[in-house]
Amino acid sequence: MILVLLSTLILIQEPAAGSPSEEAKALLDAWAKKQEAVTQLGARFEQEVETPLLLEPLKSEGRLYYRRDPGCLVFALEKPNRSVVRFDAKSYQVHRPAEQRAERFLFQEGDLAGALVKVFGPSVRTLDSAFAVSGFERSSGDVRIELTPRREDLKAFLARLSVTFRESPLELRTIAYRNAEGDQVSIRLEDIDRKAEIEKEVFSKELPEGTELKVHVIEKSKGGR
Image (cartoon, rainbow, N blue to C red):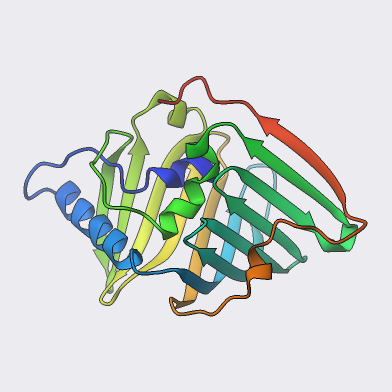
C-alpha cells in the first residue's frame, strides 16, 4: 500500500561512512532540502501496475498536483478513465465522475494518511530504522535507491521500495514498489513545475451534487510505532 511506505522515504538506517547507504542518505537529504521551498507543485505522471492476476500491465496517466500547507496531493487521472484520487493528512478519496461515485477512507493514524504527501514535502529529520538501503545504482545520469522495510508493520504489506532520481539537476523521476501480494507499481513523473499556480478548487474534498459517497474508517494499525 503506497500510503505508509512513502511516509518513511527518508527514514533509513544510519549508514557506514563511505558506503552506498551514505550516498543514498546524502541524496535523499538533498531532495528534502530542495523541496523545502516548494508551496505548490504540478507534474504529469504515468503509472503502470503489474499484477499476477492479469496478463497485461494496467497503465494510466494524468496530472499530479501538490500543496504543502495544508498538505494535499491530487492525482487527476485522464486515461484510460477519468478519476480523481486525493490524499491529505487524514484521508484518502477516490472520485469517479462518470459513475457519480466516490469512496473516502478516514485514517485514525496520521502517519498512514499523510504518507504520500510527505514524499513531495519531506523534512530533513533524524534517520530512523524503518528502511535499510539494499541497492544503489547509477546509470546514464540517474540514481536508483532500493529500500527494504525493517519494521514488521511495513513488511506486512510491502516487499520492496525504490526511488529513482535524475542527479543533475536533482529531480525525482520514478517511485516504484512491490507489495506483499506481488503487485509491482511504478509511477513516473514528467514536466515537474515547482512554481505552478493551481486553483484551490483542485484540492477541494467537496464532491459534485448527486455523487454517491461511501465512507470507510480505517483503524489504527497494531504494528505501528
